[in-house]
Length: 209
Image: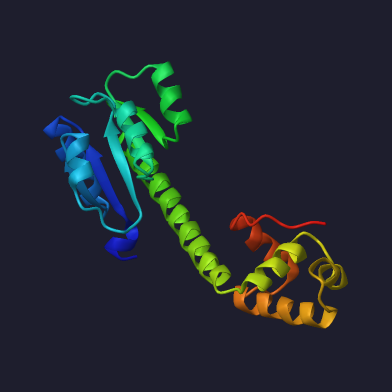
């Protein structure tokens, strides 16, 4: 696996010693990393388009880690977060996990616990990026359909037979078959079941009588 494919770990902690320690650990296992003293420094950096995660200290100057987690979500920055803290408590942990954090580690934590959480976070981001890429490709295929082909697709995935679609659209069954064939080809669907799954991913409303 290349360094880019392995991912990038961002570390935000106001303690330079902690940042250096974590970065040294990550380097020892072949993981790239960048560190920051504040959340604002992280927001200003240019982040590579690669699977990544964030190791975030809860106690930060200015804005705390939980508030920063919410800021990232509001800004559309979707990155898995691992919280670290020297002063964790149960309510704080619950709030972080409910907001989507991968892990909440209390200092001092074992190196292996942090590495396990990081690999889990990178895997999560890798899957999320693949899903986004797949959906974007599906959307591109859907955008290539004509308006009538989209109508036919909506009716077909709702469970209608060709003759029912023809009746609904006021056209012939032969014409519907042609449109349906075009839909299957352009969407690259091997079966009706696959087309239905594609429509669900794209959140395309099915049409019914």
